[in-house]
Length: 302
Image (cartoon, rainbow, N blue to C red; front, side, top):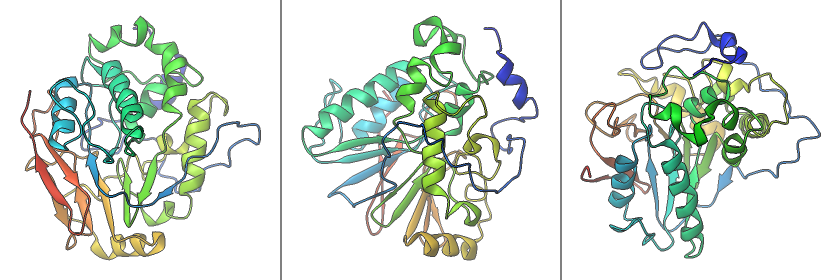
C-alpha cells in the first residue's frame, strides 16, 4: 500500500502500545471548527439509560466483537439485537491489527438501527486508530486489512472519504449519566474543551477542516492518546479534579491493554476496559455494565 504524504507528518510517532506516539505535547484547546462545517452537533452529555454496557478495543476481530456483544446481552447467536433498550458504548479502536474492520463497522451501524427500534442504542466513539487511518498512518494495518474498505483504504478513510464520513458521526468523548467515557481518558487540560474537540474531530473527518489533522490526533495528552489513566500508578487526586470539573462520578477508559482484564482504580472512580480481547492480543472477553458500582460481564471467545 502506498503511503500518502500526510503520513510523513507523523514520522515521529513511536510504537502505539506503551508509548505516547503523537508528535506534540501541546495542551492548547482545539481550534474552533470552521463556520462552514455543516455537521449537526452530537450531544456530549447523555442521560443515563436503564441499562448501559461499555466495550473496549476491538481491533479488527469480528468474532471477538460478536462475543463481547453477546456477553453484554445485546445480540443472539444470529447477531440479531435482543438487548431491548440497552445502550452499548464502544470506546474506539475498531480499526487496525485485524482483518474484519469494515465488517465490524457495518455490524455496529446495523445494530444501532436495530437497537433504536427498541429504545436502545449503539454509541461508537473515536479512538486513536480511527484518526491515524484518516491521516494515512497505516503501520498497524494487516495484509487482510489492506484489502478492506473496497480495496481503497487510502481514499475511503481519508478526510472526506466515504468511510471517514461515516466515522464523522462519532464523538471522541461521551458523558453518560455520571460516567465519562473516551478511548484514553480526559485530563484536566482538556476538561473544558470537550465540545470543541468532538466537533473539530468530526468536521475534520468529514473533509470540512482542510488537511490539518484534529488535535485529538496530534496532542499526546489528548483523550485518544494519554496513558495517565492506564498504567500501574494513577494520580487519584488528579482524577478527582477532572471528575469534579465534569460533574461526573467515574471515568471509563480503554487504549492501554490490561493483562489481568477489566479493573478499577481510585476506589472505583476509574475503570480500565481494554482487555486486549482481539486475536492480536488474545485477552479475555470482558465488558463493563455501568452502574453503582459497575459490573464486569465475562464472555466466551467464539
